[in-house]
Structure formats: structure tokens, C-alpha cells
Image (cartoon, each protein chain N blue to C red):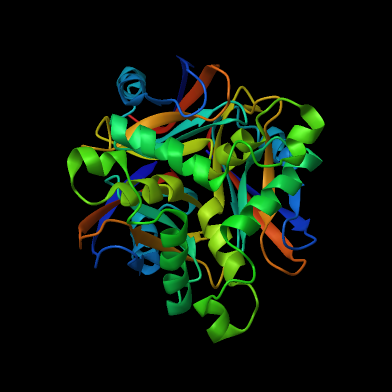
Amino acid sequence: MVATDSIGVQTRGEGDVQDVTAAVQAIVSASGIRDGLLCVFVVGSTAAVGTIEFEPGLVTDMAEALERLLPRDAVYAHEERWKDDNGHSHLRATLLGPSLVVPVVEGKLTLGQWQQIVLLEQDTQPRERRLIVQISGED
Amino acid sequence: MVATDSIGVQTRGEGDVQDVTAAVQAIVSASGIRDGLLCVFVVGSTAAVGTIEFEPGLVTDMAEALERLLPRDAVYAHEERWKDDNGHSHLRATLLGPSLVVPVVEGKLTLGQWQQIVLLEQDTQPRERRLIVQISGED
Amino acid sequence: MVATDSIGVQTRGEGDVQDVTAAVQAIVSASGIRDGLLCVFVVGSTAAVGTIEFEPGLVTDMAEALERLLPRDAVYAHEERWKDDNGHSHLRATLLGPSLVVPVVEGKLTLGQWQQIVLLEQDTQPRERRLIVQISGED
């Protein structure tokens, strides 16, 4: 049994982190699937999906860490070619990954109390993002 | 068909890497599922799951690399706010990711010979970790 | 319903990135599964699977970024012990991850237009890689 839905998220651009846990849990509850693997996948190559303790301090820390690791103003061949100012965004997104899988057990995501599912925007511009949420399991 | 189980792991704190491959394979064998997607998911926001060639050299190398990339003693807004000394642990865990999916074929994990499933503890303290292991497949 | 197949890829060694999107989509189409979770998993501990906008600039940028983050010529305990010149390859592969899950909807991968599924070779030598592709879903 497979259920698929999606979530639209308007982001504020680079470094924005948005908590989608409640929206994902609502899709699980509406699906009628009690046990199975849930995937949250972001369409596009300059955003990522993951888990974090969602609080403002870590949102700031993540943005600063990514800037140290993969600086916006370094020289990127992608930028030389396409002039869209987001070579670093692509690299950060690939490193973090576009996809997260979480087991669902008895209708609930098996997250910890301080572990939220988040969209991590890496593009320099605000973007309208589409998250595909799919569960493969049984009722 | 979905089978769910869990594995408890007592860790020694930051940098500890524990091989759970045999425990995961035992869950596969007990499930009766021959083919399907297996997910190993760690509950909590300061640990990660992945694959590595599990040998002492790489355990040391991974700890040193993560210390260079996301140093314990940098300034973190998370630390300013919560004083729990683990801002770097959260960032490392998010970067590595809490979840791993491996195909099971004819009752076996499709790992390479030198590729083990590991829990990577990032928190500064020893922790009792819970790994959820779930397979969605067919017998 | 579960379908499993594999893709062989000959790589050119460290930094090589190969687009396998068309091969993965062909497996989806041949499977007869219309909706479900698809996993691409690379066997071995010195390669990774992910998504990227597959164009030559980003291939170069990713290789340079990984060299800055986890340099080939740093001192690695793995190298001291095994002398196979690929301590950095293992760390890069673990950080990027061996596994990618993408939802399939109505027979199609839910990728963006500029988002390809790629194998990222991290080993120093050309390698013959095996990707396991498995879908757990329904027709």
C-alpha cells in the first residue's frame, strides 16, 4: 500500500530552515497507513531535507557552518558558466541530501522529542518548494 | 509486508562509532522478508547512521575530520542559549544524517565486504541510543 | 510488490561523477510499479550516490570542495595502517552517503528538471561499480 502527497513551502532564501514535521505527520494520519517507510523528498537541486533540533540557535549555526565549509564567494566553475550566483548552493544541497526516510510505527513518525523534519533552503533567492511525501507500508 | 524492530546501543560519547551490521542482518533474517527496502533510523538529533569500512583507523580519522570541519570549541548560538555543550554535535549529526536505506535481496543486506552499517555518536556524553529498523518488502 | 535490478558503472576514479538517471528510470519503467519508494544504493565504502544538477562546472566544483574539506594529503590513520592511499576517499563517501531514496509517482521519478541521480566516485583508482536499484510499491 502506497500513499503519496505533497507539501508546498515558501522559503526566504539561503539559510532558511523550515519545520515541516506537523505537515508530514498530518499526511501520515490521513493516509491510513499504520506501519511503513516514509520518504520526504525535495524537488530541485538547491535545497535539502534532514532532521535537526528546530530552534533559532541551530538555524543560525547551520548557516554559519555551511558558509565556512562552502563559502558563497569562493570561485565556482558553475558560476563562471551559468552566472546564477548559486554554485555554493548546489554543493551544500548535494552534501546535505534531498531525501529523508523515517519509519512510521503505529501511525506515528519515530522521531525524537527534539528532532524535527526540516527543509533547508540553500538557494540565494526565496523559492516556492515542493516536497513529495510518500509512504510505502500497510494499514 | 512491513516488519519493525529496534536495536539498543550504549555509546561512549563523541566520536564513538559502533558496528550494528550483524544486529540489523539478524532482524532481516527473523522478519521472513526476502526482498525489500530496509531503513535504519536513529532517534534523536545528536547521532547519525551511515556506512563505513569499520576499522579503528577510520574511526579515528572520522573524529578528527569532523573536529576540523565543525570544531567543538567554535562559537555556537545553540550553546549560548542552551548551555548543553553540544552545538557542534547537532550540526555534525544533521550533516551526516539520521537515516540509512539499504536494499535487501534474497534475505541479505546488499552491503560490500568492507562496508558496515554504523551508528556514529556525536553527542559529548555517553548515550543510550535507540535504532529503529524497518523493512518494507515481500516474502 | 518489490522489484530489484542493478546498474554497472565503470568510473574514472576520484572526482568522477556519472549521471545514472536514465538507467534508473528505465528500471522503473520495466518494473511495472507505478507508485513507490525507489532506492539507489552503491555497494562499497569509497563511492556515494546523490543528486546534483549534472553539468561539468559542478563536477569540477564538487571535486575541489571535497579536496578542501577532506584533503587527499592529510594524515589518515587508515592510510598508516592499510597503505591503500584512500583514507580521504572513505571519509568523503561516508559524508556523502551510499544511498538515495526517491519517490516514484505514476511511473516517473519525482526529480526536478535540473536534478539528476549521480554516482560520485571517491576512490583514487578507476572502479567497476555496482548500483542496486530497488522499488517497493504497487502497480
